[in-house]
Length: 121
Length: 110
Image (cartoon, rainbow over all chains, first blue to last red; front, side, top):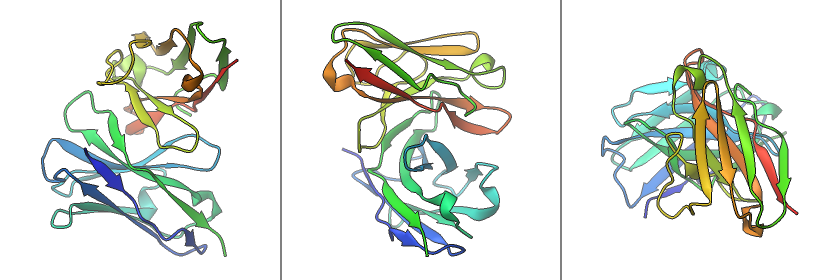
């Protein structure tokens, strides 16, 4: 069964960089059949797509976050990573990684458990 | 949110409820697929319906999806207490461009 894990730092100071990784277990990130996405959910709020990457390194970002986001892939470690720079309190959220089908219909499935990142001094 | 959902719906056990998801000509109305996710309290979202009407393996047939024009709907029949959760619709928006979600609907089983 595919398992996505996103261990994270938990607490990040304002203006610093949030860094998260998503380790894919029991499935190859290089299969070519899937994209890999990051999605976040502020406490008590809805879901927001952050960005998506293909194993080749092609990336697609939400325009509202594009200037601060870098998503990368490491096929040797079977993991994707998220870096969000210049964070503020509004970036406090649970961050999920999710697999997205390359072919239509490209829904998100499965999702990782999520990791809460809190921005606070 | 780009996709509009009612904040809450409720129903008694055994009843049928529907959750609407209203978009526009740049997303649902353009023919892009609609997907639905169920988020139980304290857990990650789980895919419930994909490609407008399809259920992943393991999802009960009490859950069904439909789409017409610029809107989509999720129907849940034979409500059970375990269905109490937040439900999100998702599609693709050509103006963003990228995936977009509805604001979520909290289902309460009375």
